Image (cartoon, rainbow, N blue to C red; front, side, top):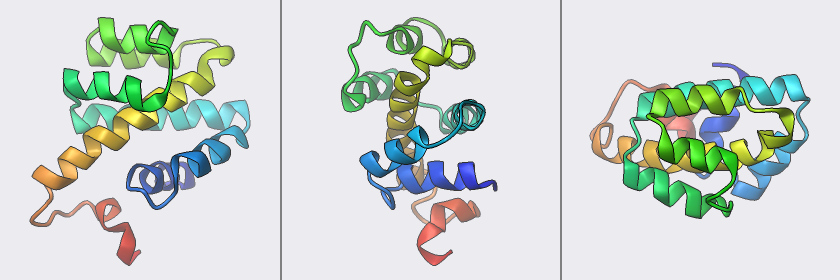
Length: 130
């Protein structure tokens, strides 16, 4: 797992606050930001967020629901939305990060609780012991 992937999981699991995660993301170069969004999109796809979780993520992100990433994630099926979000111009990258990290935090929390609550082989779900 790369440093970027580890940071994403640390943020989603609450080892870093949302503000610390935002600061970390803002300190990355644009190329690294794009890599982070790509990794985050893959993680989100694996966590299978529900429509309700998408709505909660928009609220949690603090973004206006009319912002492009929010509209895309609400109106298109998940894989298409994630693909389109990753193609947005750099001016949308910070908003995309806020939305997607919120969505992953919510959907992966559910997955850890329901699917991995009695144990799993995902070492990144055991970051406390890493």
